Length: 237
Length: 237
DNA sequence: CGGTATTTTGAGCAGTGTCAAAGACGGTGG
DNA sequence: CCACCGTCTTTGACACTGCTCAAAATACCG
Image (cartoon, rainbow over all chains, first blue to last red; front, side):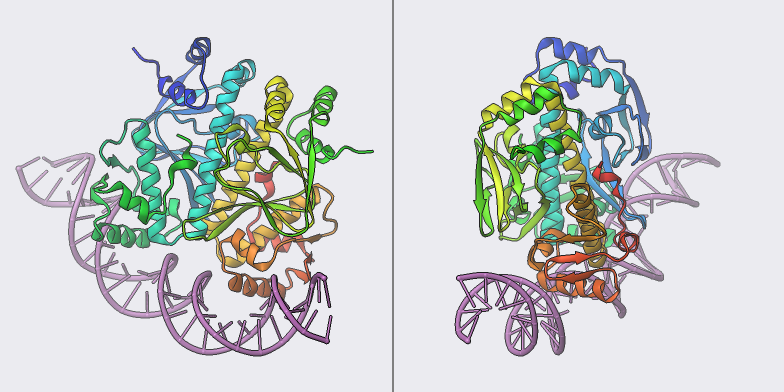
């Protein structure tokens, strides 16, 4: 039987080898698992004393919003990802965390996590690297929003999602699920829902993507990467 | 006499108290100082085995670029800031670092820095928090680029720069230097140089900013914050 | 003082947003 | 199994923000 946090530990391990006792210490953390049937905000910008959140199943995303209510999504997370690392080590959360429908999320009190990170150098290093990779991805998104047009932006987003899903075995042969409505995809790419729709249509018409419902197929990954100006190094996989 | 790295140590200290021996260990690092008279790229995306760079005097900025050469600036740094933390702990640099004219930069071999960070828990924690704050600022920039119009974006940028300069005593009474051309300001805000010029003009016409050369004066900080939808929490100052 | 970089201005245009309505889809209860 | 309903996607017409190109004006620097 595998532990609910095994995907998280596997993920952490890619950022620096963990020792057996580190894995055991993580598995010994007190965990509560919450399930969400519909999209639910599970943490808000400004929260203090957050619990540590790890995605177990399904998907979640993180966002910020402007004073006028416009939302910007800046990460789409898969099982094994932690969702609010900054909130644990900074004084409060700087962003919201939302669960997508059918997500399961592990909730862990912050104190034992902080203690564990402080106590184990390999775990410290893994958390640190994971935060650095997260920031690197954020910078690529910044480049995407600031300097690329709608078509390139959406293609880039799809390439990144595919690459990240492939790494976890959630995409094979260019086939994957994108658990977002077009409105959410627009919030991630800085486009309106309407323009997101038109942009996806263009990519379909060009034969770069095939879509049936939430399932996408990429006939030629290299062609989509070309269209999305995508170079995977920034993911540090 | 103050050490070249004293601003860096002061900055680090805001992210978690350092002990006297930590400060001394940092001051004992082998440092070379480089001066740049004109804008110079001092590190590039993809660099491996980077040295650790700390800004001593003047300004520097960090950027990425697309395949077609468009540039996105994602941070403008002041003395005391480290410039390439990710490159030290990840396998390679994910972005460029550029010195602005008259900058002085401390260059430190990576190995002793990594050793020092590993050896001292307070330093580890300070580096970690500093990376988390950097990421938080990146997320706010993402929100800025994705969801705000040109006027709000530029006003927000100016508010952030003012707040960060005030914290270091480089701005008093709403007066500060912005060491960027309008082209660079545009690269930071995702606008063309021409539109940046028009946007600054509008802000001047509205009386929100006064500008003489590179020196800016903000008559009413609250008015500019209103215009820029600026809330300072994400800076964690 | 001349030369270069920077800023400003204008005119026209492309890309993206807005609004409104129709259509497709998927889940639910009967 | 079907009808219904809410959500999501698509489409069209149009407005507008921000981009492009070009040139003039200005500031900066040796």
